[in-house]
Image (cartoon, rainbow, N blue to C red):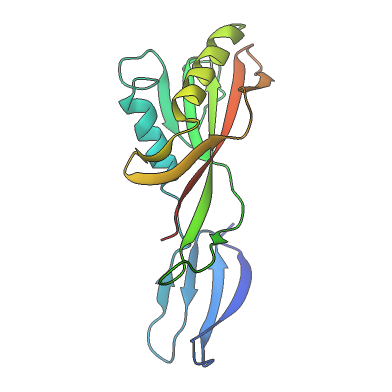
Length: 186
């Protein structure tokens, strides 16, 4: 099964002249402009996952020598995989906000969503909740703070406590925390 074309969009210049079409296949879009070779455009990638990953590792909440494995976007469910794991992944987020003009120009903001999932050893739901709560306490409420490589205007958790997401097939508990990280739109 190859890539499937999901959408075709027309891209116009500011003067209204059509620049071509865009066929989105997976995470890559090819745009034909004029009769030359296609211009490859990739959708904007959130670096918030990398920023939160780096923050969690830097502050010793998971990864390195903490006893908790730290992953980006992937948690294996095999019974032989590591029990104590923290996974950082995208969690959507609302549409970008455009603030009203204040002085010179507009200021555009993005409220990026990040999900942190925590899993502990079989039937040890206190360990997964405690680890998730430590991550929530470290990130929630940060204002104008450097998280990873980006300064965020605000970091907030969407719930006051980690959410219990149940046990997997081998009895390992899972807790999740969703965050919104407000930053300047690039």
